[in-house]
Image (cartoon, rainbow, N blue to C red; front, side, top):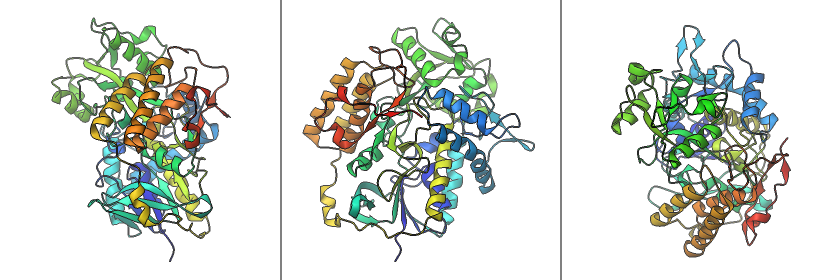
Length: 514
C-alpha cells in the first residue's frame, strides 16, 4: 500500500498544497480545528502579484530583492514573481472573491512596491476570504483525509536519515503514529514566542524545532519582521492595522500632530517595514507616541473599506474615522525557518517545508509587504508539482516505533511561556543589543534545564543564537551595539548541534547571499 503525503498545518500553504497534490492521497493534520489558529486567516492586505498592465514579474522580483536588504535569493524572488499571478487567477476561479474593477483587478499599493500590485478582498479581508474558499474546497476533496484538531508532536526518523512521518496528538490526547511517503511542514511562523504579536499565540516556531531534531538546517532565524502599525491597546494578539491604510494615504503622527516619517525616509509611510517599525518604536520609547491618522485619507468610508480594522478599533474605544489610532510595532512574520530550496525540499529525504516556516531566501532580511500569502500559494504549487511528477519511491522505514511516543518533547508550562514571551519582546525585539541577548540566552538555557527541551525553547534558542551571532544591523535585525550593515551579506545557517555547548558569539555566517 502506497503511503500518503502528510501535510502538517492548515494555513494557506498547507491547504493549497493539499488541493494541488490531487490525486495523491493526502493526510492533513490541522493542529487547531480547521479554520482556526492559522495566521493566514488574519492576513489583511492581500496577495502580491504582477496583475496590472504596467507591472511585470521582473518588477515584482526587483522590488522583492530591493526590500530584502542584500539577503534575498534571486532565484527564489523570480520564482515567486513568475508564479504568483497564476495562483491568484486559480484562486479566483475556485471562488475567492478578489475585488475587480470591471475586467481589471482592484489592486492596492503597499510599502516598497513600485506598482499597485496587491490583490485584495473587501479592503482588509483577503486572508479570511481565501481561507474560507480553500477550506470549502478541501472538505470536498476526496483525496484529502482531514484529521481535524490533530497536532503534530514530533517527526518520525526513518532509515538512511529520512523522515518517515510524524507522531500526532489527537483531540483526545492520544499519541498516534502517522507514516508518510513525504512529509510537508506548513506550520507557520514564530510570532507566538513574543509578548507583542499579531499572530496566533500557538505559532511558536515548532517547525524549526521538529526539523532540527531530525537534522535539518535552520536558516536566518534572527530575522523577525515587526509590523509597524498594530493597534496599541494592550490586546493579545494585537490587531493589525493593515499597510493598505498607509497605501491609501494614512499618515503617522506623534502626539503633537507632527508627521514624523517624512524626515526619516524619502518614501515616508511607505518606506520598508523595518524602517517604519524602528521609527514607530523609537517614538513610543521616547514618550512621543506614534499614531496612525486615517481621518483624511479614509474618513467616513472606514467601515466599508476596512471593516476588520474598523471593528478592532471600535472595540478598543477608538473611532478611526475621526481620531488617530495608537500603534506599535509587533512581531508579525518570520523571515527565517527551516532551510529549503525553492521547491520546499529540505536536506532531509522525505521532508519538505513551505510557507512561513520555510526559509528559501525569498524574503532576505526584510519581507516585501503581501509576499507572505503569495509565497504560501507559490511554494505549495511548486512542492505539489515536484511530488506529483516524481516517480513514487519507497517510503522510509520508521526507525522510531510508536511506543517511543512517550519520549516526545515536553510542553512548556503557561507561566514559563509567558515569561519567555516577555523576555523575547524585551531583548529580541525591534532593537537588540549583545548584553540583552546574552541575558536572554542565559535565561533560555536555565529554562531548558528546568523544563526540558520544549519546542518553544528550542525555537527561541535558534532565534537568539542567530541574533547574537549577527554582529551587524540588516533589515528586521537591528543591533544598537552594531548599527551598521556589513559590507558582505551572509546567511546564518545553524543546526541543533551548533547550539549544544557552543558560544553563540562564535557561530559563523557560512553562506554568502547569492
